[in-house]
Length: 90
Image (cartoon, rainbow, N blue to C red):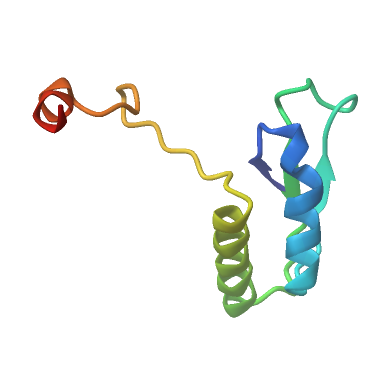
């Protein structure tokens, strides 16, 4: 079992539906089984899956995450424009 955090409970149905449309079955878990903002999707992996299966699944997850807008990236600083750029645009 491999969990992937979604964090946004409103996006769980869309993520699951889009994965299924792409022939990838996932198990979604949300409130009340998890705290409200700890929604997740679980992937059940077995020894029968090949490396190609796993790579294909990762491609689907990447596409779906883009489509439902759940990709998060932390750079160690707030996601805002540097002040020098804001001043130039004014």
